[in-house]
Image 1 (cartoon, rainbow, N blue to C red):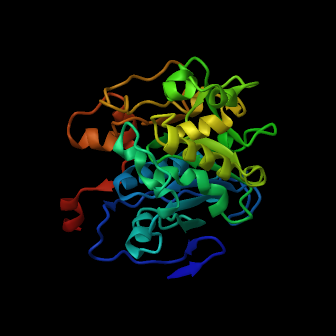
Image 2 (cartoon, one colour; image 1 turned 60 degrees about the vertical axis):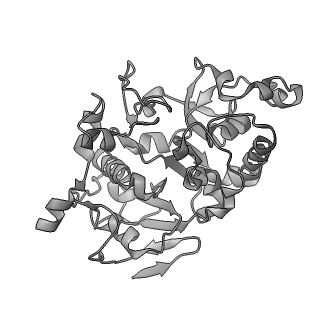
Length: 333
């Protein structure tokens, strides 16, 4: 059954419909807290993680959840918050519950696609134009009041370290913490129309703007609400509709509002770009250095490349977390 919550739909018990339109997944092992962890259900030490649920990326979401639970000492202290266009669909909820029957707490929230549909401008890749790609802008409006801090993760990541280390980073008064990449060519994220307009480019005055990837970020939800950051991002989306000042989905308006004013996090927490570039998705190798989180941002997704038998080398690092149960196997059972 479904139990209604203040801001979302909190899942209790639900049975998987026999004709689910979603993929079937193997059941994951049960993960329990270590001795040093708070008691299950205790708000102390809770780690809130937000992700979106999209049928096209559901296989990636399952792998991400498994990796998080497998590598943290306190898996029962992790609270998952899923945003979906139709969270009331029993088969969608069941698709999550079937591989993780012991997962608790878990909450589902409705993200209304109409909220952004009129604000979205075409980008270089169709997947970046989907409304759910913009749901991260509205986390503070969606999550309940008792969520004061949240770690937002894209569905194409696996975590190979204790996620509590990232979630508990000292924000130092900033609204967002994320790995920052100051060697990247920041100018390429905006059009000539932006850089040739003195008023527009002055938004970075007094800041040293650097690229950061919004697929992995820790957010001070209270500070985001108080600062009206949702409205500030939306204002730049409105400018984009009028003047075409950037090319790349939901990332540039985040950069316009926050670049140069975030808490930098060690790069080990976002080994990004493993999906290749946004146009051709060519294979990329790992960057040097330690790794805590692998991120298949870009066009190529590991489950698609593995299924097509044309995987990149890095895709074999994702494969151990894949809970997908092929249709033939599911029917046999």
